[in-house]
Amino acid sequence: MVDSTTISDNLQKVGLIEQYVQDVIGFSSQYGSDISISYTAYNITGKPSKYPDYGDFPQAFVMRTYGRWWNEAPSRTSTFMPQSVGEIDSQDFIDIEFEQPVYPCEINIYETYNPGAVVSIWAADPYGKWSMLWEGEPQEVGHVSRIFSPELKRIDFPTRVLRVEFYHLHLDYYTELDAILLKGSKEFGYRPSKTAASHYDDMKLGNIGKLTSQILELNIQNIPPQIDITNSLSTFLGEELPRFLSEVQEGCHLNYNSKNEIGKLSGRSFDCLPDETVLKIFGYLDLLSLCRCAQVSRHFRDLATDSLLYTELNLKVYWYCTTSKALETLAGRCQYLQKLDLSWCGSLKSIRSCDFVNFLNQSGSQLTHLRLNSCLFANDTVIIKVAIICKNLKELALRNCSEIRGPGFQALSCLDGLLYLDLYRTLIELGPLQDILQNSRHLKHLNIGSCVHVSSMDEVAQTLASCNPHLISVDFWKTYSLTPAGVKALGHCSNLEEVDLGW
Image (cartoon, rainbow, N blue to C red; front, side, top):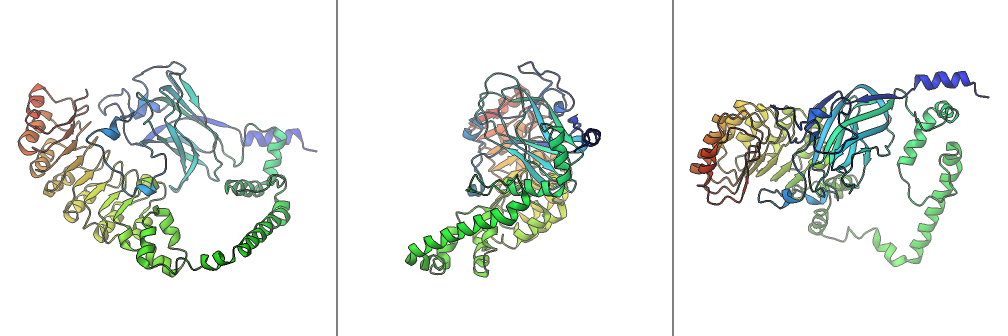
């Protein structure tokens, strides 16, 4: 018989802790400016101030984009290695920090305007390794405020850092967030919906309960309903699982015998193909699949690591597992690398600046396209190395790279082949920017939105008019110092198709 006092004491020890966001440690974009508090990422900290009201509130966190226009505008960019991108390609993220590390039980996201953009939630362990808590489709919710609280996967570590990703291609206006509440326990396995007795049983199971949850997360397909994993772990491992696997193996054997000729060929099909054909097939695989193929055999390893398969590399979709070690491994395969997207990578110091410099030394000489959006390791040392090694750059994206100062930007003035330059929300100043523009005579697309350290946007506009006759798009979003004189100067750029003079 379970002692009720013991249950009460145990529940108190693993009691639920509720906490709102303490700090914002990173984000991809914000509607507000760094010189204002309206619509900025830091508005997500603390308790909700507007919920349950619905509407457009300056006190909320709002991202820069929404809708399909951004993918249809002249300044749009193509995706590198598109086979690595799933059905949902997240457009924005925010990294948030809480006071105490807990095992998450519930996350409440207070959406106060155009909800439905949240598509994934991640948690970081104390060593900077990320695990997914939830992933789902974007939603059509309507014009109502709500608390979005998806069912979370269980993780085996306490966390105080979350990343929330957004997809708002389907929205007809900006989504806004008021706050985020994390509910969790100091002890592994706590579930507030359970009764005290069942929770006490979970605590007695200890590691067995943890192992059971890990087996469930394997999502083994087609297990008959009469097999109950959760009923008895020892029975499942000792009797039911071996019997089930034996039946599956016997079924496969019978199927093999019934198709004997096909069976004979199936083991040798790839051996019969020339390497060029296998390389062509491998070219349709995503990066993770290529890495798995490299573990099959020596022959597959030689083919799956062929440099011709790595002329484009999209690591943005693998931001959660892209580390300095991963770059070191990939460097040997990227002899002919031309297009690299490292956006969103390197959070929580998972990539060091020196390690990326080493990667550039080995694999950067033929780069024509480089995206380092929201990369904290992108500092002056990195950008100076980019300017020295990547002489053929046509596209350079440095959105939200706040660690680059004067020397780094000044070094970029030696790149005379740039067609696309994105400096959104960087610390670039007037002098280095003018030097870059004067030497980039073929520039077609420029984003200097929220670059509040540029003292005179009129002078920038005049430089564009005199030095960049091929300009197609320019973004002056929230730069404040542009006057009618600068707008008039832009009139000399006769190829302009897209202009953003917001705020």
